[in-house]
Length: 208
Image (cartoon, rainbow, N blue to C red; front, side, top):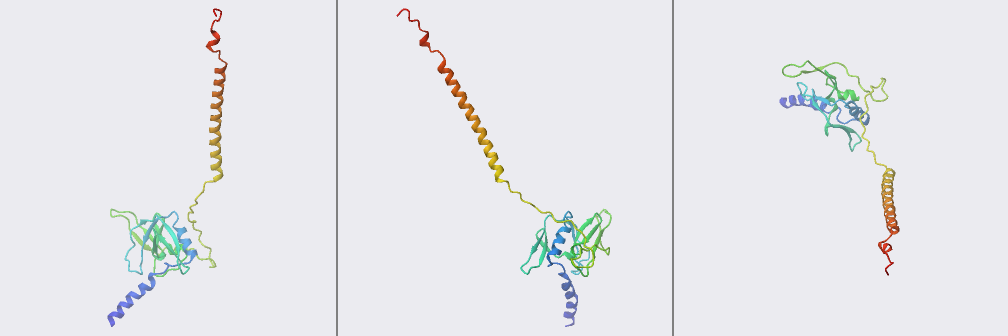
């Protein structure tokens, strides 16, 4: 019984803190996607889950937000749903900042930022840091929200059908002019041949 209680004491707090900013509102999700714009380098570090050190940096190619059936939103990195509290985005060459704090989602038991040490023979060392992060607070709070770049919007441009008709009409008109010019040349040539004297007119009929 005491062993089970000890396990519960160790496991329950970690589970309670594991899901902090996985399901968020639309504003936080939008801020998270915007904070990732132009910042593809990410490090994962979940202290409440038992991580002893940050993971290796990796590059994200696809960032999106998705709305669930309950009206809440989640953020996906490379089509994988993540908890913003344990994702750190590179905001400077030697600094990663907590994505949840950048988006305005409160966290507990996580470092606000990570610091990258100088490179060595074995690579770089990324360590937790207590340096504060400028938090993008939700509207209504007594603070000025941090302005983050807006996510890129892909616009699909549809070709104007009027321009297509104009181009087609110009092609047809050009073909018509060539055909008309050819017909006129042929007619002129036939007219000249009709006006040319025939050989019968050159026969000398004086001996007849």
